Image (cartoon, rainbow, N blue to C red; front, top):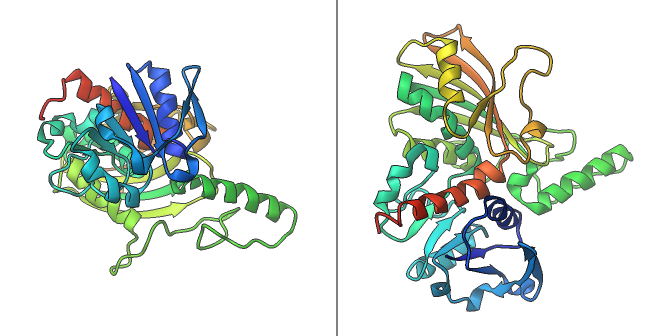
Length: 335
């Protein structure tokens, strides 16, 4: 199996390498690809150094599967042509809502891989990936009518520059020095910013619309969803507060059992000091953790949940590699 990673020097590209190594993914030849400014630099994988190759010159026919982890503009420019020579798993938002491109979280909708038409598979938004893995088992049992999502997203969702700036801003504030934001619309250190991505005409941000539209595409277009996305001063892991209205009645024991038995989910709900998961607890772990499970007494069949997940893993690298594993397991069915 020959594998290529476009954007190998970025946060998600490096995390894909970590996941491939940890899973002992079968690789004969590995091609690490990036922009010309990174060409010649080296990254170590399984004890061997691999030199970065130039994206502009790379022959995609060398790779059976290619991971794109370099952003929407790069995917827009290169994926269509690359897909004629290689199976593409794209981490950007560019192809997610294309009706001919399956948007996949393997535990939730792997059957959609039968619908591959363009040799392109889309990875969902990091906030969506951890959300749908929780909603799916509950929707199957109790039918979700409506969900209200409030996110508390780490700065790693914006990339390495945002992570570096949070650290720098924190130092400046602690030393009583002036903060000038470079990659955020407001100071992020010791603050919360209710704005991720660009605003649309109706007042929602693109991040919020991604969660709505992608969740509908992955699970059920009939679910009513609304969201508010907030950036918080945390380096890694996204948290989400979820309010759900079901069509059917439920017990909390049924909810916990359904979630704990679903692949990728883990319930941590002890109703005591510290008996819940936080972003730090989720960092470096594969699961989506579910806490604060309780009934919403203001509506019929209402439920409140708190979930946290490592956005670089579950929301990006891990999900992408699991898509590749599913393709291999099924011998690229649908092609």
